[in-house]
Length: 281
Length: 281
View (spheres, helix red, strand yellow):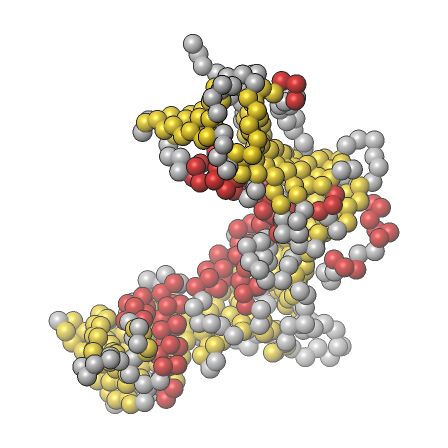
């Protein structure tokens, strides 16, 4: 007999390290889908919420932060060790979208996730109207993720832009592009975006005074180059965000932070780090 | 052999169009149409030479207001042919234009360099001149000796048969489960429970429907709930449901223990039958 989401007894929850409930699976689905550039995701559960990390080739990493306010219920048992697990994100996304509601306006799918601890699978209960889906997804060993040490102290440039116009700019980038370059100048009020590929080069200048730039802080001239194949992994997160902050440090490390507001008005962040291309001069 | 039929009911034309579109989407290489005094039966074999797995019989009285049929012989008063459902669908789709539906659609067996089923569509027009659109769909007549190959099999009475009204939901769930695994487990119980389940290395996934109307079940003297289940190729059922262009009102799932699943898609008084063999793990 299937267990109804709404009738799970609280006492049962004490055997689980992590239990959370959401009335509508839509927002978490879209957040996770936007960072699905690798099949493997690592979940970290803390008192302030969930952090989901996806990494590619140790060169770029996305972290989605989902605060406890987003959940209808979020219970984390106090433990000595951190609660974390890895799993196949493609499989999780198929489960979250089992009733096909992520992209439609039909009745919402409710979600409950329970995790008993190391070695145990993730147990999901999804309910839409009176139909229930139970999933048990195998967890994987948590592998060490690259620590992109991005501290505010080393930040040399920071710009905050509206996502919509930036999305249009990036959508126009030729898919065969090799390098994306950001140029910021302390004495010139523009952001110069340059793309280089075998088809040619494109330069786009964004004026500091344009509507799309909300903040422009440039302490010293900088040119940062990134491989487009890594950089474009951030574009899905850009597509669902309202604003983005782009910062680079003195080493050229890129940190993009996307602010995403869901239907209920709650705000989540996705952070994207990308290592620069080093010129062999 | 002679065949002439005139369709004047827009609903009948729509029904036939939807059926042809559905069969076309199933990507059947060839579909058989059998015309008799009472019925127009479309049927499909899985592979050339193997038995019929899909069929739909429409009553001539519902389709045609006028009908003339002279079959192969007086004794065997039927005409049997192979044709492409995609061509039938595109011929019938042209029966709608900006001014509304056709005044009439006439079907005729003709010989234009080779045998054809000719669709003559009288379209409405604003001026005095009526417009006629003629489609010749090439056919291959099937000799009488091969007719038995294209008869649909006697389907055994299912152990359990249940009716599913939430067609869209079942289609979505089966589509997601198909992406997770190539094999689908279907279990139906005489108390109206339906469970769709699959298992892979990544985990187990099961969706539970309750309170489904039970059309047919075996009497058990002890009053216990009777359960029947089988494994089928997930791709086959997913493709059947994805091809559905009938505006299906409900599905009937007949489970024959360990042997096959008999699916019936019903729209009004039209029933499309599909047999899916059970597979062993």
